[in-house]
Image 1 (tube, rainbow, N blue to C red):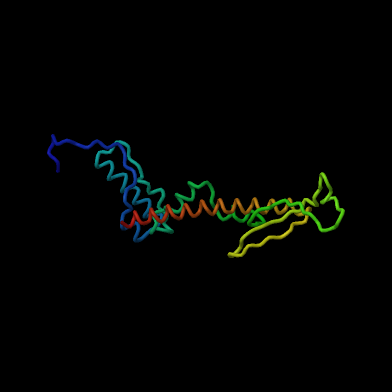
Image 2 (image 1 turned 60 degrees about the vertical axis):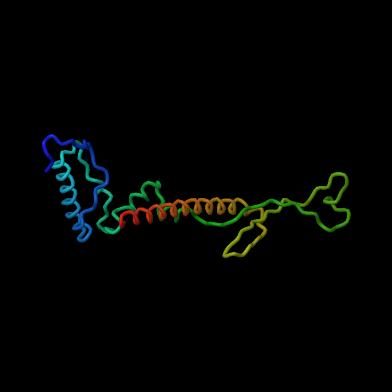
Length: 179
């Protein structure tokens, strides 16, 4: 006990409270409720003005080893979910280019002087897959579909990038918890 006139550290609230060992060892909904009650009571006994659940709301009884961090961070990324990946539709990596060509026929418009008119436009999609560069022509009537597939692939890359960022943050938080 502190002497009656000892200086006190005024505390109004508690942030993250350590998960009780008994909750991590035998997780259940009832144990989570009990742990939350314990956290509130300990804070009241300590004289804390504004009690909280100590962030136990993040605790996932199905994944006690990570203290609810996956759901917490996934939620922060605004829906990086499997359903979003499914609804992307057809995908195609790469980029689409428009080309105009010159043929080998003598006297053709593509060689006319002073204003040659090349043949085209021709559309070509180019991409790298499994380390191999590929380029193929796209018929004019399929250009819109290929553009949609390229846009879907870019969205997939963006979602994947967010997911990897989430995984990196989660790994960092796991290391903090185990330290």
